[in-house]
Each structure stands twice: as structure tokens, then as C-alpha cells.
Image (tube, rainbow, N blue to C red; front, side, top):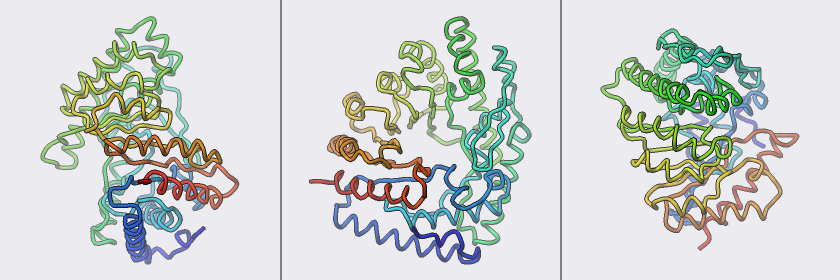
Length: 385
């Protein structure tokens, strides 16, 4: 394992990153020459929980200290390029002002703290006790939740890019992509959510719609803050509780689809959809309510061949691997997952995401060795003629 990224002097980071960009470009070009330029690309990433232990820092510092965050991002890109044989070339086109994965939930009054390794700790929300939309509040873009921290970090990171790196780093301000179920179930609690379905479904529909109205209001406020001429022409929906059997297809069609329809009417085209869960039985419903979709992000809990049979081949797939599969010993299972992607690629644009990597074994060296074994297998197996 190459640990140079852990100890490189700060002033050398950009030069060293440029070297990794050149190395990875050559590595990927060699792979293209061997397997073909039309081959299936494989991407991967370290889960954010992995970095603090590996580099020896506290995640709350990363969320609050903009100078440290920029430096750490550069080190992480160098480390990944040095140690992982995927198709990711480091780039500076987006370095997010990261204040935590669930920042958008704080717009609704959710308080979140993080452990030293970044585990989010959700404080009880009043909605957990009482089903009342008023408890969700109306956020103030500049003052609610973690917004002051986010704005300060974004502005400081932007200044660092300009002052220290000749503006080469493009600092990104997060978009509100999260869907209504993802937020509501976290704030209300899953058991209460099930009770709402049975006992107060009209209230539930109104609450989900309210959350999406606030999503639009955030988009509008973000546009003004960034001095953008208009909002993006397309948007994205990431709703992890669209996960069968934790919800039923009937509930999705009767309650969620009308809310999604409302989102489309307000925001315009929704061109991408993600859920971490199983969406096989509601795929066609998603495509009907969002007819402009061009990309589905499918996680490993889905049967990709089954969904492929339901979806127009013009829609591209990103297929996520469950990390216990990609890091495991079950080679036959790995080959079957890879074969399914290869089959789908015959008539559809598809790539693989072997991500969410954490230390599943005693050392990161063993973990990344297993990841690379899988990546080598996947590169070869997916691109067989």
C-alpha cells in the first residue's frame, strides 16, 4: 500500500496530484488499448467513514475547517490514485463544501452531530412524537440548521482555491437532491411512518408534498446565493426509502407518485433517479412519473437483468456493487454479477460503481488488495468479446 499521501508536505500536494493525473491517464489508456475504448468503465470510492481512521483526523474538523478540508481532499485523491485500479482520474472540477451527508435534513429542524470517525448521530426530532407539519418549519437559507457553517465553508474554500491554487479547484455548493421519503422517515421514524400510512395517509401526503415544496424553495434560494442566471434545466431524485419491501408498490403508486408528479410540475425534467434499495417492482412507475429520465443509479440489491427488461435501452445504468460482494471471497457470485452487467451492456450504456469501501478486514492494505483483485477480475470479465 502506497501511503505517500499521508505525509506529503502541503505545498507539494498540487504538483503530486498532477503527477497522479498523468499516471492514471496512462493507466486507463493502456486498459483501453487492451480491452477497447467502448469497454465498461468501473468507478469506486472510499466511504467517508474510512478516511478519518486511515489519515488520523476527526471528521468534525473536516466539516468545519475549510483549509483542512481542501488539503485533505487533495490527499485523498492522491491516495486513491496510488492504490486503486479503477477508471477514476483525479480532477479538480468539483470539490464539495461538505458539512455532512444529511445537511439537507437540518433545514427541517433535525439536529445532527458526528463522531470522530464521522458516524452521524441524529437527535430526536419533535415530529417523532407528534404528526404535525408545522414542526417541519420554514427554513431560512442563511440561518437554519448547518447553513451558516455550509456558507462559511464554501466561501472560505473558494477563497483558498483562488489565493493558493490559482483558482484551479472548483468548489461546489451542494444541491438538494434528496427525496421526500428519505427525509420524512428519518425525522418521523419508520414505525411512526407505518402508522401514518394506516391512520393518517392524507396528512402523510401533505407532509411529503411540503418537504418537496421546501426543496424547490431551496433551489431558488441557492440560485440567488450563487448569482446563477437560472436554475438547472434538469434535476435528480435520490430517495433511499423507495425500497421494497420497506414500502409496498401500492403505497408507492398511491401516495409517492402524486408527490413526484408535483415535483416534476414544479421543477421540470427529472433526468436521474437513485435509491440505495430494491426498486424492481416500481421501476415502470418511476419512469412513467419521470418520463425524461436518462439515467438510473441501481444498487446491488436489484436484479439488473430484470430491470433491464423493463427499461428503454436509451436509458443508461450505473450499477452499484454491494461492498461485501466486491471485497469478499465468493468469486462465483462476483462473476455472476459481472456477467449480468456485461449482458446489459450489449444494448445499453452501463458502468459499474464498486464503491462504499470501508475497512472490512483488519487493515486497509488487505481491504484494498481485495478491492483490486475484484477490479482486475471485473475489467477482464466485463469486457470479454
